Length: 164
Picture 1 (tube, rainbow, N blue to C red):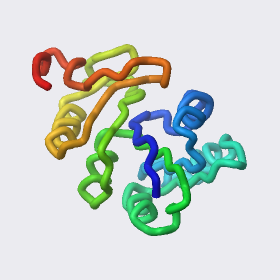
Picture 2 (spheres, one colour; picture 1 turned 180 degrees about the vertical axis):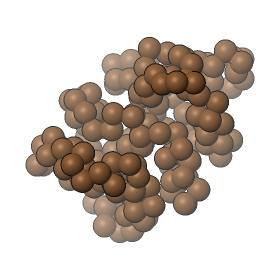
Picture 3 (cartoon, rainbow, N blue to C red; picture 1 turned 90 degrees about the vertical axis):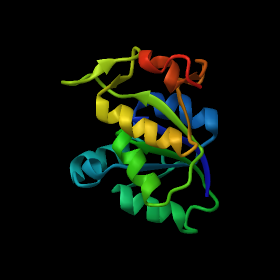
Picture 4 (cartoon, rainbow, N blue to C red; picture 1 turned 120 degrees about the vertical axis):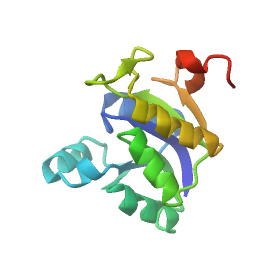
């Protein structure tokens, strides 16, 4: 399996992923690792049919997705992996999924979340999750679309400015 992009985007599969990221990383497979979508047949089906038929789509729970990615079933694929939340990314890591980079794309505003960029709203739990992944050596950057420059997640967090 060739993991070409690992991204957190609460919208999961949507136009920006299909029109910008898939061509940029030349992905031919999208794996969505999110328990909520995996457990909602209607939303799962809507995501699957939105993807062009030339691109393989796998949608499962975090545990199912990690098992698939650790198997040999996707060895010939260029995989774009999507998590819906920071907790999904940490769960996958704790289940043994190895990835070295994580792109923060979109985490929507919600009660208890603070704005850190135009597309990133994080709560203390999200920050703790990102810290866990950062301490594990995963390079975490924010980048909405390929045309933008990457920014270290730490540079978005006022209390973390100056670190890394």
